Amino acid sequence: MIDRNGYRSNVGIILLNSKNEVFWGKRIRQDSWQFPQGGIKPGESPEQAMYRELTEEVGLRPWHVQILGRTRDWLRYDVPAQWIKRDWRGNYRGQKQIWYLLRLLGSDCDVSLHTSGRPEFDAWRWNQYWVELESVVEFKRQVYRQALTELARLLNRPPVPFGYSGYEKYDYSASGPLTGSTAKQSE
Image (cartoon, rainbow, N blue to C red; front, top):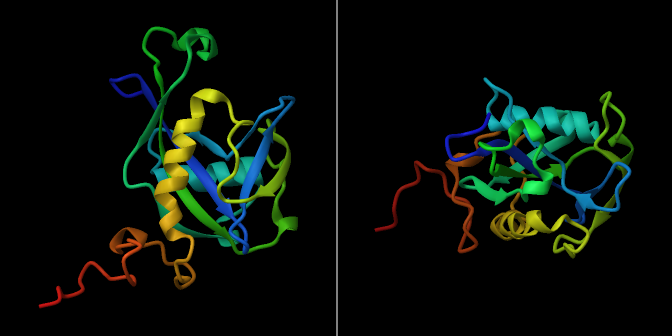
């Protein structure tokens, strides 16, 4: 789905382990590393696309993770002309992404890079949250910085009950505890 400005709708996934280290996948047959990400199919919500991509690229199912939050808005990057598929030239400019921050509830052995017929990654590792981005293709680095920065406020968020995905109802500001959208204003 390419919007009228030439951006393809996409999701990005920052997966954390219990030490707040991030999942880093090595692009198949390349010397570059990245977070899992992928396009949103017609009729899919960003959350549905995130779960599909998580399964396709990392082999994890919804019960293996907890959603800690997502970016408030789309983050965009332009793709250099030499990287654009021939079929897309002319109307394609780049990607717009909603980024999700997930906590792995399962274990490392739940990760499988070969659950789809076309794997994205041939290796993976855990990195510190503020991972060096030199091994990321250059045109994605700024969006990675934006996503990591915006979602960092959620790193110490207390767990929510299993199956609850109403993260949009809460204020995750670093200034204080979680407050529901129906909470009364202090007088």
